[in-house]
Image (cartoon, rainbow, N blue to C red; front, side):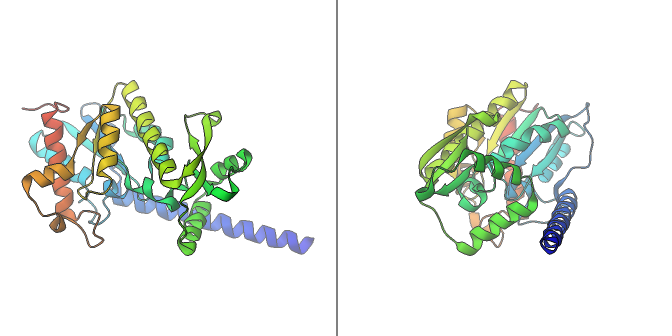
Length: 298
């Protein structure tokens, strides 16, 4: 028994060390890569960009992400009047944004929020690491207690990394599943659904976008959605924009109208923009904000 106890203790110590390392190095990298080290400035209009890797700036060098470039465009046109914060997190989905956006808002107290989110919600492996718990259809429904155990474990980087690695190695895509869909901020508001995995994920996405939007508006803040330059998920963006009555910066349509070749604006991965692509995104956003009188035009 003593040997078993020592083994368990060593395993716990190793997991704790890995957890601390992941949090430490991840936090440092994120802070250096995307954070805006400026405290809330009551004399400036604060714009908060929330999203995933496209907001973060994957595919370009630090300072070339679209929030940083939008900040420079605004400062050049309206000196000292606006500040743009980047709170993009690679791999995040609408569910994780749903649970974190209040913290982002508390850090920056923005008057305007620019939200970019859709692609990661279509990825099953990423969705099992947030509020949407998907199980094998043949074993559904998952016991409610197990669902909340997973919700507790999701606060640990080690657990999320293990889930992602497992999904990557197995490479299985469940077409039919059971899923606990989050229907509100309280734990009692999870409800079990059974059906096609893609439908489950989209149902959660639409709820999250609606809940995030309502909460931001309820605090008297303005919100805008922006698509990617890449046409991926364009129908999802347009649908939630229409349903929630939110102004959409349709980067795909604006790119089409200007007849700019998409390939020249993408990085090597074929999805994320390069530095020039992020510049175009920032320019399209500035145009959208001005045309809809979301910022003061000279």
